[in-house]
Length: 171
Length: 332
Image (cartoon, chains in turn red, cyan):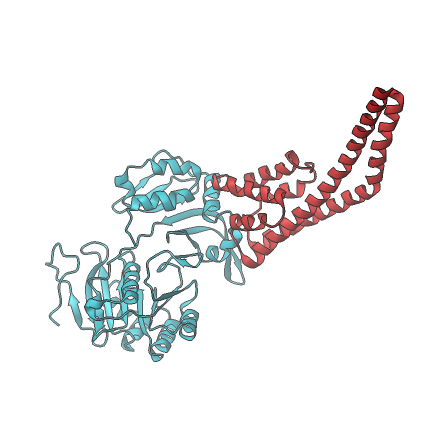
């Protein structure tokens, strides 16, 4: 009986963890989307006011927006240093948010759409494209926030209760 | 400033800015050729050419230049930041670290009658810069009187070393020359085309002396006024004078007690007198000395130095003088 109880506790704990992990992942997605908007806002400033060269701008921005953005900026700058075109470097680094982070490919679509133009056109055009990508990211963030508010409790309860039901069935 | 070989400069400061597919063929060129390279010419759908001191040749190991190669080169030259080079693109050239100038042409976009930018870049001309320390050693004594510098106009046909002489003159005037009892002067350069000091991110890439201030990218008229107001220079240096507006502003500078050193295109002194604006410049005696450069003994040969007041030669290179690049003093 003791073994069964211990097993049930473990099942409930594992199932609850899954529920909480899904919620945490959604929260991280939102945070990262906000940071990506910050990255683009910094880029707007560097391009529009300081007219900083792209590699310097990324190095500067990377230091102030958290580890994921720092890794992204470093990735782009390193690839540029190795002779890669900016479009390739930007695209590859954007995928790091999917491969090593909580985002999905459709989340980074605004970043991917920037890849062919980033750095390669005049200031006005750069600002137009970046602001557009920023807007898409903002919409994406709002959508996930709504989902989060709606489903946060659902995932948590589902995790706990799913575990309880599984434990009862097993007992 | 230590003098480096042209091959070293080419490898360290120019090749990294070319498309990856062009880098290795250039690196593997024999040093004898690398030492003579003056320009690298990239043209879309045509072979990459090297303009050397005595010939021009197709870069071995490369085919016709593709659009991808051109775009990659432009990307490296602009450091993936076309938006940061808008002003340079408008002017048609970008300066690289080291002072090398990249001229660009392609499809021009006009706005209100002025060039807004250049797109679809089709040709690039990468011109290697190499400062010649000591280029003004010979001519400087003719430009100094009683320890003071005399306003000077350097005249020559294109490619004879006007800007090189001007640059070294600036360096020596800024340093001062104890041998000529010439103190170091405060110099202001209006570097309209970034050719004299070759500033990159505001930092002069050439040695222009310790007392020299550079105003890069400004027009002569606005630049000279700004320098007069803000930097109180003793000498103002500028390149390529010749427009009607230049005369007024140069006169303005002279009235303020500033001496001038400038350059102008001209086949000979008589050629200057046939051009209305330059004739006026000479007739108004804005310059005390006119230095004429030619190619008789190679690039940068001082053919003559004239007194700006009476156009009598202070120095005249004798045709019989073989082997001496700088010739001898005139009788007058």
